[in-house]
Length: 221
Image (cartoon, rainbow, N blue to C red; front, side, top):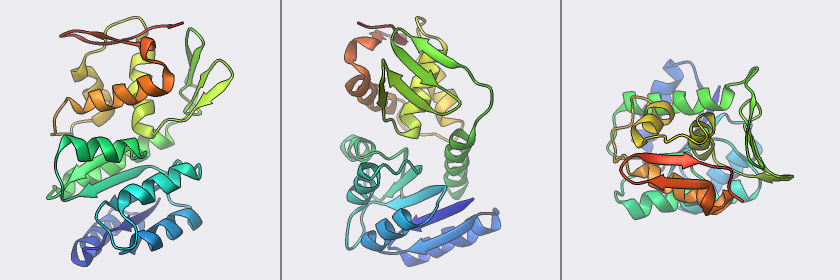
């Protein structure tokens, strides 16, 4: 597995690189947003660890540029900022996960492994059909009628949990357990950010809110 770390705090970047190399990953490190975009675009990376506050080009713009170019590499954003607005902005640009500094190295590794595991999962998983919505859990692709809908890895994982239990109420706790694993120690309301993103992409009526209970995926119109 090849990882790219784009982080301008050189001591932190090199520390992460040493640790992840010891975990068995091949790791490249750059300290500038423009160089990070170039490396991510030219290299075949399995995951990018991307800081937000970078010289040259900030992490939001790097992430947005990769997604605009059709690159679906998993992106784990790092930031010293904290707050719902910053997290929502990062996710809106196409990031798959978000970690606020200071963070536990153990949590970082768990998040990386979870993203890589979801990206690499394959096999005889069925295509889940909910009305004209098709969720191909093997190819990790989503179609509405004949149109393909582009989702981030985390958006897909949330949708998959809803599609597996289409028509049933799925609680936030159940989504957190299956999508974020044990490592997530933040606000469970982050799920609302992903639900909002899915509604924008799939159509709001498809995901119903059941107050105090969770969410339900329905066929829609």
